[in-house]
Image (cartoon, rainbow, N blue to C red; front, side):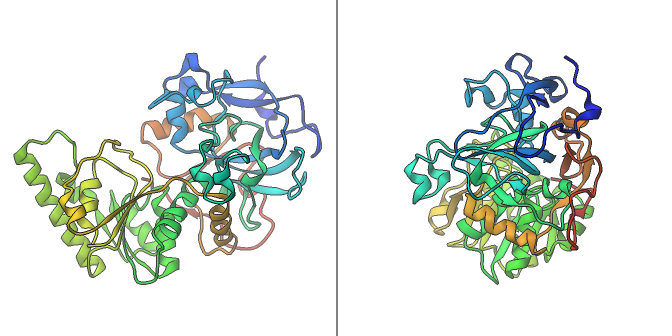
Length: 416
């Protein structure tokens, strides 16, 4: 049955009652490939919430690279994560309205306006109740390792994933920050114990993670230098509070491929040293912390750049996850490598309070209609985007959902 996309913003039931079906952008295993082909609109049954679960009417959704991977089936197929389901509805960022709650949910009720963090774990895992939900064997990223994500009229989540929607943000602005911001918060505030006076080097400072890392440094009183790919992006990170930036094309030779000859490696190492000197001149010394998510191409330079007893914190590897570096600069100078993955509900809650207080602001490039979900992911796949993309679902236009005064998102035509 063809889905009438002009009716996506209309829901015939009141909060507390779910319609039978909904429009959703669906990936199926047999059509994994380029996002424009893998994502297709379908009419799907609306899921009922189980115990401690909530179904949310999606007003806006955020686009992240994880569902480019879901479309491609790389590095592994998402159907490996949820084999019992023959479909995948992606989307790991959302703002919306609680529509129905399951048994045991007492903190939230139909009609509540919320944003959603994307960490899920089983309530039965003991790690959830004393260590950290990120350590639980059941831990998954909602909308990537699970289905029922935000690219649909309704999504299904655990009740602990809900956070209060900041009242001064429109629906699209509130859907534009969760995954990347909460990840950056855990990396710097929890894992690195960021303090006033720390010197921080941020790779990809104008990208989805970097714009929040930069703001967190400024808010904390740490000095940050961002690595960017243009002066335009450098101007943005300075606007966000960085004390300076390095344009990475001036040091292209420092990027690690992994197949260098001995002579090429010597030349690469020389370029890395030149880069480190430039960073030190901007910061007034070597960084206490290096904020990493690039991986293979930059990691050897990160280990070289950070000061003795300093920390390299990493949450991803967009250039490749097989890392090699000169380990002498790690052990002899007693540096630390810290892994970090998303955030738990407490960290997401504390981070969201900073958004509510306008101390941290989302950075948004473009808002698209629900009909553009596949196209938006193809833009990310082809690196033709210029920043964060939000998708209107239940909202019919930008600016809806704002019920209080305050600065909204920073609009910026830049990206990672």
